[in-house]
Structures are given as structure tokens and as C-alpha cells.
Image (cartoon, rainbow, N blue to C red; front, side):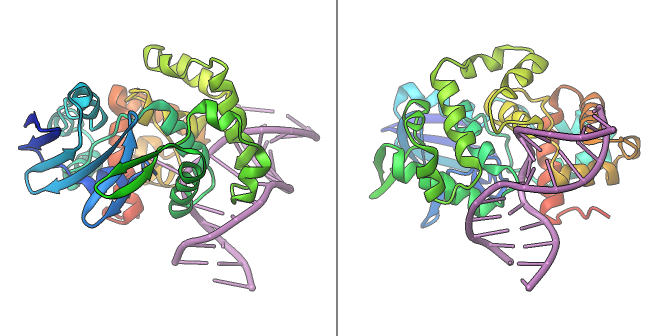
Amino acid sequence: MNTTWQDNTLRIEGVALDARLMLIDSAQCFTWREYQGKFYNVLYGSAISVEPRPDGLVLYPVREDLVEAYVHYLDLPRDYGALSGRYAGFPYAVMALERLPGLRVLNQPPWEALVGFILSANNNLSRIRRLCRLLAEHYGEAHEAGGLTLNALPSPEVLSGVSEQALRALGFGYRAPFLVNTARMVAAGFPLGELDRLPYDEAHAELTKLPGVGDKVADCVLLFGCGHSSAFPVDVWVDRLTRAWFPELAQAKSRPALKRASRALFGEDAGLVQQFMFHCARTGLIPVK
DNA sequence: AGCCAGGTTTGGC
DNA sequence: GCCAAACATGGC
């Protein structure tokens, strides 16, 4: 793989990357939108387009000082090929990894992961995306890219000033107070940006202090927004697949017990394999008995 | 029409 | 600790 930056264009070549899978279909992130074959979002204060290429991706426009940020966002430095070897003792894990060669586990800005996954609770994908878009369109800053107007998610400070009633009127339901109260805590100094440097247990304990953030949402934020590759979110699909595919996990008595056993079994990159298996199970790519 | 959605919170043992 | 019920809304 090599990356070159020129004329505000970042070219990533020599690597299998499936933009639609990474940015939309794998349900790690709810803010990307597809338009005429390209993918658009606002990241790090800039609108960006991602164009799929047979041999990689083309990102535009990219300021030179943000190259590293986008490379990190896409988790490009990680050797995903090596994961199959590391998990060689787990045939279903290897199968999932090998069926999705274009998938990466994104390193999103923690605030975006937090907003997205608070909205994900007991919700379906299309509505999670719609609610993210509503937040951006009503309260986020507008940016231009490729003739499109794109809105960023509102900052914690801006969202703090929004009323619960206003969000309920937009269809946020009972998640409305979770969102504004979490925004207030983050704006008031909650150390969201330091969670990547805390041990997993401490970071998880911090996150669950936020309203609307329970065990599972905390794990999603840690995995997708704080670089904690051992975080192992357990939703209905992961519950089913782990019990069906790994006999040693089948007898876990509860979700928390299943999560502990899974983290112990899969080790420091448990969350990465989780994401591959999650997608394979959810889409039926690998049947869950 | 009714069940489900990448769950969390609250209150009861 | 584990369990049940309530919670808003829309997709399918």
C-alpha cells in the first residue's frame, strides 16, 4: 500500500478497501452519505469526498495537515492480513476476516461515535442515519464539497444549547434528553478526548457515566472512537453468533458474562474480529445456524 | 398489524 | 448481581 498527496488529493493505492462497506454498510458510522458513486461526510471540520477505485481510494479535498488524520481514520497502518494468522485457532473468525477483505474498523472522532451510538440504542439503521442527518441539518455547520452542501454534526457546545423538546419535535423520542444531557456533560469538561489513553476498564467506567450510554454503547464508542481494539460490543447479533460459533462461549449466563468471556478468548484485538463477524452474521454471509 | 431495531434506565428482589 | 417493564419512532 502507498499513499500520495498532491493538489489536495489523497490517493491510497495497492490495498483492498471497500468504501461502501467501511463507511456505510458495516454500521460503524452513520454520517456518510452516498451520491453518484462517491461518499461524502464532514470530518475534522472539512467536507470530504471518497471515491472508490479498483486498487484503493481517492479522497478529495484533503489539506496536507489532515493527511495523517484521514489515514488514521481509515485505520490504514494496521496489518489486517496478520489478523487471520493471529486468529488461526478460530475458523469462524478467519472465515469472517477473509470474506471481508475491504473492511476496516474506523477510528472516528469520539464525539461522532458517541452521538451515533447513543442514537443507535434499540433503533434501526435507517432511522439512526436519519436522526444523524437531522442533527446535522438543523444544528451543524454547513460545508461545500463537489457541488453538495454537507453539514457536520453539531459540537457538544452547540448541542448543549438545544432543548429536549426541540429534539423530540424532530422525532428523537426518548433519546432526546440523553443526547442533550450528554452534550452538556461533554461541553462541561467530560474527558472524551483522553479515553484513548486510559486503560479499557477505566475508560468504559467513565463513558457509562453519560446518560444514554450503557455497557454496549460504551463499547462501541471505545472501539470505533477511542482506539480500544479490545472493546467487544455485544448486541443481539454478536450474542447469537458467539454462542453459535464458539462452544466455549455458549454457556455464558448473561450478556456481561458473554462479553467478559469473549474478550478473554479473543484478546487485545477482540473488537476488530467482532466487527467482521458481526457483519457476516447480520448480512447472512455466514449463517448463524 | 405486529415485531424488531448494533439498548438504557429504573425499580424490585 | 439478575430480571422485567417502560421508553419513541419508524422499517419491514
